[in-house]
Length: 555
Image (cartoon, rainbow, N blue to C red; front, side, top):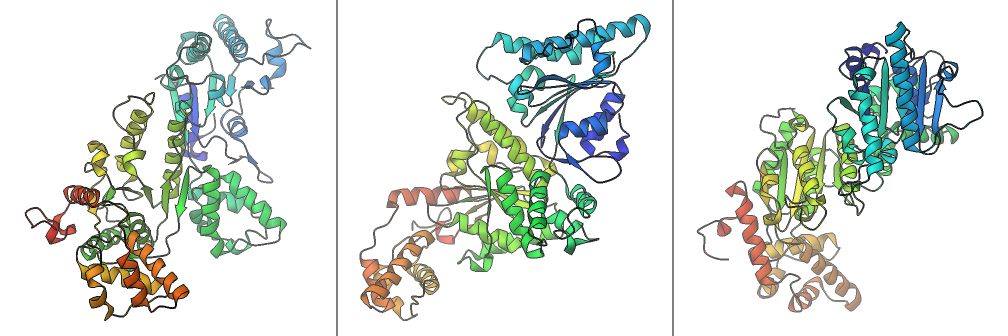
């Protein structure tokens, strides 16, 4: 195989494992459908993963066969050598297309070549590439399929049978998600699971440099500073980036600095097929009303993060509080203050067996490539799964296990900060919100006094172009709700603006009319229950107003 020093880390690992005889079967998962910069001199080319394996990893192998459900079994290198096998399909006969027959034929050929080597020392290096292995040998969780199990056992022998291990026989199985592949293979200790990551900034920079003659207009602004677009577009696939370059070059447009963040959002969301979305962060903590102790703490964390001083940097936050208190808004303010992207997980649960776990694998691979970011999980009490596997074929338990493992991965410290938001933090598994996964729990409350309620309503009315004078407080004070959330206050501000415009009232008159007719969106007993939950979850009492702290008089 190729020299490890010339290869990316994942490919160098394959070479080291094969050359040391530690493994001969490799399950490549993750970013397996992307393009890669192929080796060689002359005009640079982007190719698929199987082309990269052929040209960069196994250029000296005499016989190479490939299989996929669409094309069947094919010999892509060494046709004459393969045809010399006495049991090879005769000229004019079709190669097997069904998985069972293809796997059987390849196994018989590998054993034949191994026996020849033992008999006379003549060695033929053989490689086999199984594209979309999860379609040929899928994981049927919770079900039995004897024919499928037989195929999986046959593939398992390639990595375990002494006769085959001793022969120069390398097999490569491609699957986007390990969870989609039969567990007899994905969990085999003799088979090496190799994650192919999204291209890191250094690889993107080299790709831009090599492709610049091909796309001179699109890449013109970045000559000799390829690291800038490479860093900005980290997290996108080369397939998407190449499509962008082709479009820009066709239109004779250059990729400008202002394009980069927008392009990254578009490319990554497209690649992830609606599993995630980027939240636009066009506000800072200055836009957050009140919560001074919380804002001070968050600003200190941001300063540590920016200085790369990670000893006291939390792995994650929990924002908890009653419905409508602005948990998502606080996330947006935090992200804008820190100047890093917010990735929101969405729609990763699927009704098909194994799809939910596969979606999470894909999301985690993306997060590893993005660099610094916040990962936001709204309604975390519903999204994160449970230890119990009752009633959902075990999906909730597997989601819980995968999330717990990823959230406590210390390699993510300083790169990924998890943010969970919930109005029912009591329903989140205790182990998911322990220190080491969620270190800081921040409660968010509605207003507790008429003065706070008026201040909040006044700030929102100002934004809605229906400003309230300070003097209006005394008029409105008797009608101000006991607990007013930002969500409810914004709804009131919209109604006030509407009355000002449609009834020709002053802002104070409109506010008084709206407050007299105000009906709380959340029942009082529910609000009290959710406030009590937020108080009990707080990781620091300085986050809790004095009147809500244990031992204080009821509010």
